[in-house]
Every structure is written in structure tokens, then in C-alpha cells.
Length: 266
Image (cartoon, rainbow, N blue to C red; front, side):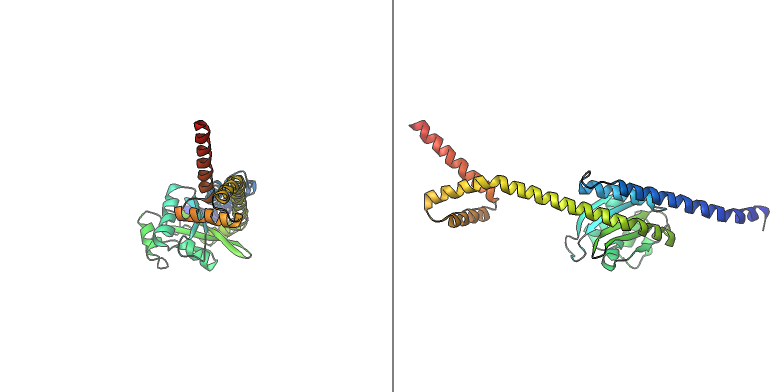
């Protein structure tokens, strides 16, 4: 062994310690980014994109990351939302979910465990996904399920172009990041659902007066109860495949036009 080799051996522990220190700083920065995300300041898509970027920052060796909200109990329409820190990640995840319905994120979600591979081109776990992604020049993946005590929210996929990039240390850091990420993503999802419900309720309340007017018109023409008039209105909506409020508004507008025409003729 040469004198240079002796110096390299002596420096290796220091280099390892420095790398661990740098990895710890990256993880802390990613976690700080998560902690700084305020529910409601971003829409769900924007928040998922930020989480993907923080994941790519927190996990050593990552060239890009994606966050996916999944329906683990469904084979069709499995993906609820998809975000990526880089365009190539979105392309790969669309291959996984939309084209093939096979890949590490699906495995991680169904099995509720971390999944990794350092040679996707020859990976037997995903015989269609692996070679296809390998041909794109991406060879390493780390998939982390986003777990809550009673459910799987989705998963984080972390990709690298090189082979054997994600070791056990990277997986450990990824799991430390995924735990609070699951809470942040879940909270954002619940908030988005609540906002959508609020919008739907507001739309229903704003359309109620015109529906009541249409029911009154139908009762004036055909007699019967309000329930019978509403049933006729709903049948028209279903037959024409048009929303109930739109059918009611059209009926009221037609009645107004006829009334104005009569008044002009008088």
C-alpha cells in the first residue's frame, strides 16, 4: 500500500462523517420546508409539488421525486392526484400508473412498505415497468408509502439516473421524511375536499330559488304537488343529460320571454 493509499484510508471516516452531516442538513431543510407549508396557502396540486421538491432535497442521490395520491383498493382510475419535482418524474409516473399499472409506488402502497431498486432495467419485480424506465436512463428508485395509522394516503417516488444510488441510509432518511409528509398531504387533501363541498353547497343554495320558480311554473301548468313537479323537472334533467339547475333556469327564462312578448302585444 502506498503513502497515498494510507492517507485515503485515514480520510475515509472523515469523508463519511462529512457526508452524513451533509445528508442530515438536507433532511432538516426538507423537513423545515414541510413544516412551513400552510394548509390553505396552496391548492392541493401546488402543495404536492412542493412536497415532491422537498423530498428530492431531503433524500441523498435524488435527481427528482414525485408525490402521488392513490386509491389502493382500485385497479381502475387508481391515481387521485399526481405531482413531480421534474418533468422526467412525471413521465415515469404516468408510465407506472396510466400505461402499465405496475411499478414500485403501487407495490409500496399495497404492501405498506418501503421499496427500492438500483437496477430498474433488470428488475424482476416489475418486468414491464423496469426495462421501460431503464431505457429512459433512470436506474434507481426509492418508493415510500405515505402512512397514517389507519390508512395509506399515497406514496413518494424518488428517482436517480445512476445505478445503486439509494442504499439503506437513503431509505432511512426517506422514511423520516415520509412520516410528516403523510400528515401534511392528508391535511391538504381533507381541506381540498372541504372546500369542494363548500363550493357545491354554495352552488346548490344559489340554484335553489330558480328551481323553486320552475316547480311553481310546472304546478301552474299541470297542477299536482310540489313533489310531483320536482319529479318531472328531475326527469327532464336526466332525459336531456343537463344539470337540474340549468333545466330550471331555461324554463324560467322561457316563461319570462313569453310574458314580455305578451306585454308587448297588449
